[in-house]
Amino acid sequence: MALLITRLSMQTTGGPSFFDQNQFLFSNPLQLLGFAILASWAIRIRKDTGWHRRLMFTAFAVLTGPGIGRLLPMPLLVPYAWYIGTVLLPLLFPAIGMLADKRRYGAVHPAWFWAVGIVLALQVIADLIGYSPIGYQFTEWFLAGTPGAERPMAAFFLPI
Image (cartoon, rainbow, N blue to C red; front, side):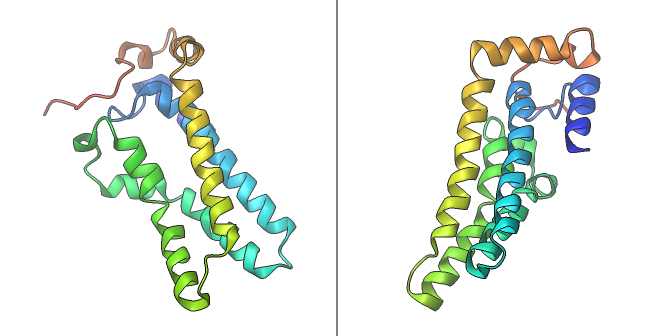
């Protein structure tokens, strides 16, 4: 559903004005992939409850991005709205878990580093693809002939 909603949003309105279209188009699916990787990994090793719960916690934290974004004044955060609303703030949840581990056990469990590393690595990959010439071309092709193509590709502040 999330991929279909991304497609619908992109092609009907060009996506949220406070996100670059190419970043939105590539980052959304890769964040879902990150959730799937973390959740699958957590399920596969569910007998190791230390790893399982930390991987699952971070997987679900990734999904909080859209909800958190709706609570923020996203247009005022252009051009960093994506990073603040859908990457940085959701990663505060695992950061709190890391602090709790440090206080309770004296060390941070390695699952946190792996989970946060996967999320950040996928965002870097999304940006490398989305902001490459191929990413721009793909975004233009994806939007061609739709109302979403009329919007500028770069994020902008909507006039009131």
